[in-house]
Amino acid sequence: MASGAGICVLPLSTANFYTRSDVTALRVDGLGPTEVALAWVASRRSPLIRAFAEAAAETLGRPGTAELGA
Image (cartoon, rainbow, N blue to C red; front, side, top):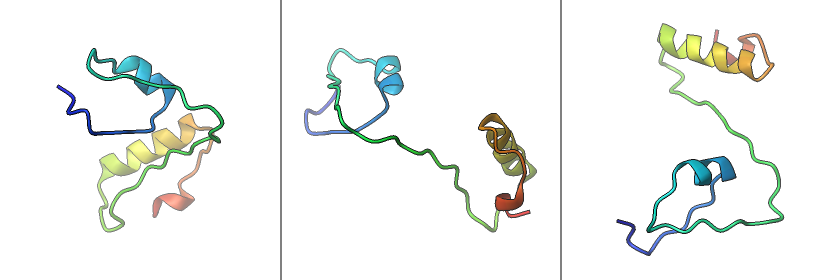
């Protein structure tokens, strides 16, 4: 159950997907576009992290791994 003491700004898609009877979502107009980032500890060299980062970059139309810490 929600405590009645919180506030969160989140995308409309998230508010529509995660509905709860004890939480009210209110539309906020006039906000600029948002950016989502993928981050991980630079010293981590997991092939799974690299594969996920590459898949995300390709999905966003940004192929290449120059900024993935190759």
